[in-house]
Length: 167
View: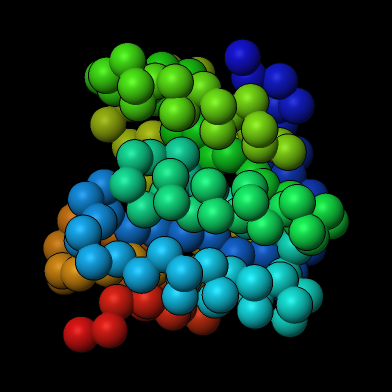
């Protein structure tokens, strides 16, 4: 299932043309998909080509699906599946496992962070994505948790962060 695999030491993408995403597993029911798709299209038109996606449920899945649709018109963009561990989908239900498999299969590149689950592999995945991007797009509703930690890390390392939540 995991082909086109590279490990984090071997990634060689243009950071200035790279975006990563961080967001919650639960997305508000009034999430504006069209507005977000328009933002993604504007990023592509500004020259962003590489999109690092953490492959979690929720916001990551939305990002992947929208970018996959945009890839039909913008064939040069690359979707990079950042997989924290080989069994990331272990606790997913049957439907979620199928969605995950389709995303992995349709990613242009797969980056495996850890061979097996560790208490830190998700954080390592998030740091890897931030370190290899010049822009972080966040869907952050609260000031705690993994998304907040990723945004805080991005800001500490001087990355541009754009939170799409209008609150």
